[in-house]
Image 1 (cartoon, rainbow over the protein chains, first blue to last red):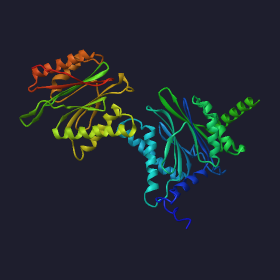
Image 2: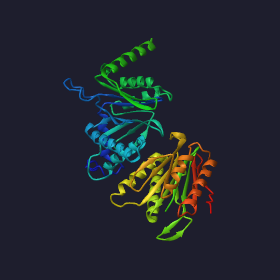
Image 3: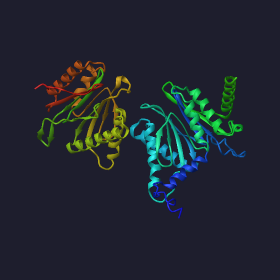
Image 4: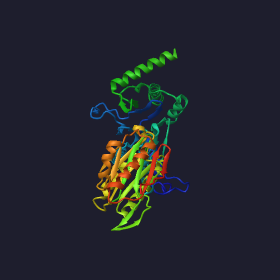
Amino acid sequence: MARRYDQRTTIFSPEGRVYQVEYAMTAIRHAGATVGILAKDGIVLAAEKKTTAKLLDSSTSISEKMFKIDEHVVCAVAGITSDANILINYARLSSQRFFYQYQEPMPVEQLVSQICDTKQGYTQYGGLRPFGVSFLYAGWDRHYGFQLYQSDPSGNFAGWKATSIGGENSQVAQSVLRSNYKPDISLKEALQLALKVLTKTMDRSNINSEKLEFSYFTKQGDNVVYHIFTAAELDAFIKETDLEQETEDN
Amino acid sequence: METLLAFKVKGGVLCLADSSVNHSIVKMKDDEDKILEIDGHKLLLSAGEAGDRVQFTEYISKNIKLYSLRNSYPMSTPAAANFIRNELATSIRSHPYSINLILAGYDKEVEDGGTSLYYMDYLGSLQKLNFGCHGYASYFLLGLLDRHHKCDLSLEDGINLMHLCTTELKTRFLVSGKYTLKFVSSEGIKVLPFNAPQ
């Protein structure tokens, strides 16, 4: 009888919980950690790669868990990637539909809110499984400038200055972010902080370009530019940051 | 026989519309307001089939209001222009609206001092202009505006130009009557008194 209330997504347990949604959130903790940090001149997204099979041909896709939705919005995924692909496809469609209707880029919060409406639908209607994905969205629009949002399988979302999703050590990640975040942090400092967070939540020997993914958003003049670190850039960045921290320690 | 006219002046857009509602050869009334005020910083001028006009402009203004309630910021004038054009272009294939429109607005972030002026017709075309005119009046007024209009006219000179235009209509156009004049700028919408030459 213990399993009476967790078979369906659409019913509450007597304690007022919706178990399938909670299980979906648990599923996300098995994924690698993803960190997002809002800096004054950009946004950093950084992630731990879990699947690093030697024979996997990674040359076909630059990025495993970061996806460009539009010129001004990207998202990072934690959870079931196949579920994420459905939502990302929907997000891209929404963004283009908005542009078609208004000839103006879709404001980030509207996009996030629309995807979350879809996620919420699966926690309320008909016997299906909810999407087992959390997202970090990074974007820029003329209303609120650079923005970072987090969403979870229940369809909740919120704007953050720095946050993380996924990973077994999410408490550690959150506390490192809380104690190191400064309101006027620069993009470079944010990149270093992201590396520090992942260093603390991962096995120390794994800190290299094979296990990590880094990207950032920034503005060049009037244009928003998105950059994903190549393996060489990432290794150079890790080496440089390590050196700096060692000199600080001395 | 309806007249819509709008042009940019310094810091804003001046909009003029005739006030008549005609049915066949009968003049039904002469104090109709054809310049709809949307969200404090947009003016929508409409001319055409009387029922379509009211139905469509109301539909548009309520949707723009809904957008601002959902997102807690107003729709920009360029976005509104493209939205309206899109509505016209999709409806023409199934339930066409016989109306021509001019949209004028002010937004802080828009280039050229924040003012924008869009000309739309019932077929779903959209043009960004410095001055625009719908109806038979355009045959008389476009040349006049080519000669006299400048975007940096003061409000006073703009109003004088409006008088010049209505005087020309009075002189050469078969029908003419009363007009409504409104001004949209950073300070919002102002209804200006306008006495056309009798």
